[in-house]
Image 1 (cartoon, each protein chain N blue to C red):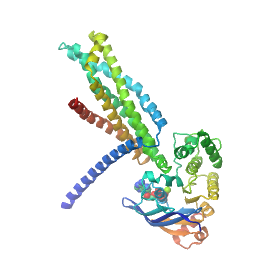
Image 2 (cartoon, rainbow over the protein chains, first blue to last red; image 1 turned 90 degrees about the vertical axis):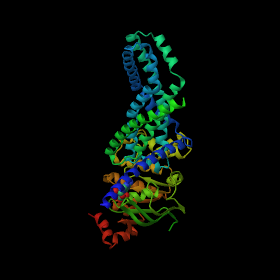
Image 3 (tube, rainbow over the protein chains, first blue to last red; image 1 turned 30 degrees about the vertical axis):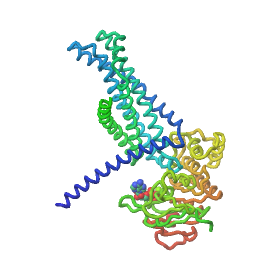
Amino acid sequence: MINHITSKYYRLFKILRSYLISIGEVFDLFFETIQCTFSRPFYFSRLMEQINHIGYGSTSITVVMGVTTGLVMTLNFGYGLAKFGGTLYVPALVSLSLAREMAPLFTSLLVAGRVGSGIAAEIGAMNVTQQVDAIRALGTSPVRTLVVPRFWSLVISLPLLSSLSFGVGILGGMIVCKTEFDIIPGFYLYKVFSTVKFHDYMSGLVKSAVFAGIITILACYKGLKTRDGTKGVGLTTTWVVVTTSILILVTDFFISKIFLIIW
Amino acid sequence: MNEVILELKNIHKKFGKNKIHQGINLTLHRGESLGLLGGSGTGKSVLLRSIIGLERIDEGEIFFKNNRIDQLSENKLTPFRIKISYSFQSGALFDSISVFENIAYPLFEHTKFSYSQIKDQVAEMLKLIDLQGKEELMPSDLSGGMQKRVGMARAMILNPEIILYDEPTAGLDPANTLNVVELMLKLKKKGLASIFVTHDIPSAIMLCDRIVVLHEGKIIFNDTPIKFQKSEDPIVRKFVLSSRE
Ligand SMILES: Nc1ncnc2c1ncn2[C@@H]1O[C@H](COP(=O)(O)OP(=O)(O)O)[C@@H](O)[C@H]1O
Ligand SMILES: [Mg+2]
């Protein structure tokens, strides 16, 4: 009986321990990435290639997502506030929530799906076909050649993508305000720029950069850990999309809270 | 006998409860070709991977010319990974870049050669592996045998002192096998030491100065090909006989 219970606790302990070890390894990878960033050799062309692939490649879905978010939010806020005669507050409300929350969050979730899965599948496939081992065997570092370029390209690109999504979202809001609520663009834009302050923009940008780090580090980590051939690659991709999405949502709350406290 | 350039002392390695190596001792001399035989799953690949630090051994020591290399960090291993190169069983070519970029990769990473010098060197190497003018092809355009040869070219472009071949002829048709073995002979004549993991006993006997048989985590035979063919040991005999079928 006692034996049974202890073995159960032992199993729990082992599971817990393996989780903690994984978390430790993720942080190791993060620190190694930072370390490799500031020491030779640098792979500038790989960085540009990744920015093109990861960042520029995500612009079209970002625009579609941004515009739609702007349209839908404005529409809903507008009808909601109209009941209380508050239509004039719509521009402020829309722009503030877009800048602080919606643009960075939705863009990051979208990118987590597109880019996170892509990175995980690519590195995972390289790992199961021993290409990652080959990088090491040839005296080079997988972190330097694979992780660093992807990490920085997304940390640079995602805030830009979020800004783009904010921009087109504001545009979408403007269209709805004009057509549905008779708010002229001049007034709308005046309201937008007088409401959204520097730290609101910063909050969105910082969030995006942090989310970018979460997406790339987790995707690379899991990719480098992939085993068991094609099946392993599939599992890795799913894991990365689910885990990064959840982590983004949770982190979002904490960063919002921190920004509200310090500003 | 030439000086010892690689020495394995009492290597132990296990994965979980699966004991792979249980006290392996092995030396490799300058210019020597050593054939490493053993059934599937006896840990031949793991042994080669341990030598260049792709796997960490649990116990024992590995020396490259009096430098202990088994405990070095990834960074400190770099110079030794240039001196000891590993030719992967699958070729392990980078599939997103061309044949040229694959072979040139170590040169771009570890030398200061100009682009045109690198181009010349790669062209020369392609001639050696009998794939002239195939620079622009992608790895997926190549047959299995060609991929292995390109992998070997990539492994030797920096003029290593030791090359570890992991089943270079496995899965190849006779013509391709001959190509690969000829290439290995050329390299041997250049004075490269090698460990040749294989199931292809005739090639091993032809190519190697010494044959080593790995069985249940230990080395049970370590002598010349001639003694190998005359061995009375029942396990060794199985290998000898399997090649005569
Ligand atoms: N990374 C690993 N994790 C767990 N087991 C492994 C790993 N690599 C190899 N093994 C096991 O070690 C044994 C030896 O493998 P290997 O060296 O590839 O055999 P072979 O002699 O055919 O080359 C096999 O049983 C294999 O399952
Ligand atoms: Mg093997």
